[in-house]
Image (cartoon, rainbow, N blue to C red; front, side):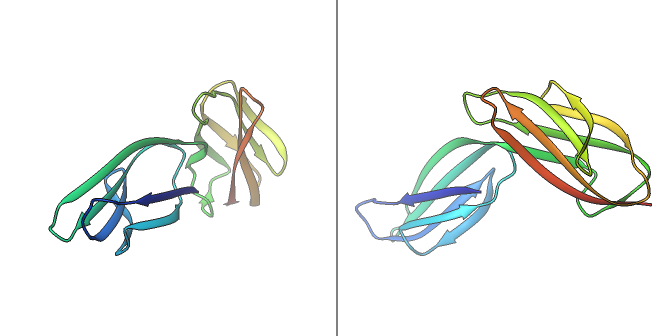
Amino acid sequence: TVQVAATAAAGRTITFSRIYVDNVSQYATASPSYSTSLSLLPGNHRVVAQAWDNTGAIYRAPITIGVAGVVVASPAAGSTIAQSSQWSASAQAPAGRTITTLQIYVDNSLKSSVKSTSINTSLTMSAGQHSVVVQAWDNTGAVYKTPVAVTVK
């Protein structure tokens, strides 16, 4: 979750404001000032705060931000998978830090570990429901986790 706050001050009446993330509208308001939370996936994102005044003039403030965390590309959370399935995930650290280790735990037991920002590995699990956690560490010791519940057929 990223907090975005902006105030448009153009010397004219601001009639509308919008936030775009990676060229997709994520928030809109008729107010010139706002603060809102946006849920973003880990990685780098281009965020643009944009406002329109009563003459139709447009004002933009673009920034690029990095969101830290772990993204599990496959399988999807809540899915039903085969006993032997491919797992793919990646991690992003905050600016100035680097991911040092990425691990996959199945039912609290370590199943795979790499010294990398991404992992692509096959895991074999018994039939039934499993709690999988993909966890990453950065060079400061900070931990980033994403849980994924799956059912194995």
